[in-house]
Length: 101
Image (cartoon, rainbow, N blue to C red; front, side, top):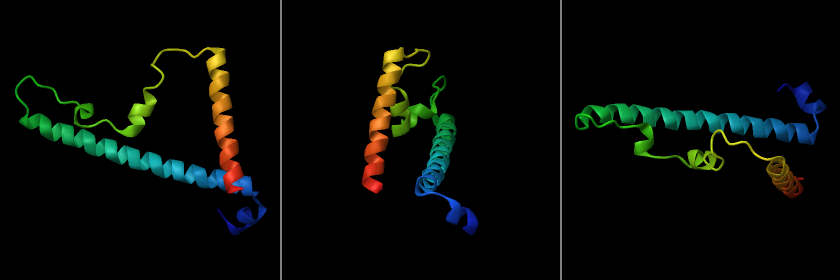
């Protein structure tokens, strides 16, 4: 971000950029952890009994994978559930902005 962009931006846009930066960093870190887990599974596979398949999820399940399982894959949310989720998110974001703002 250039100095001119910084001077021309609003506090809310700056906050969005900061949150975006941290989201990107968080994803990079997740990919690194998943890569290490995958490599570990490959190494352990060499020492496993014949016929035994070791999957990366057999080693560990990360917290972000547990969160992702809250809504089963392939299941569509009803319009009421969607509205409820949006309302929850809106409430959390408003509380967050009131604390920081």
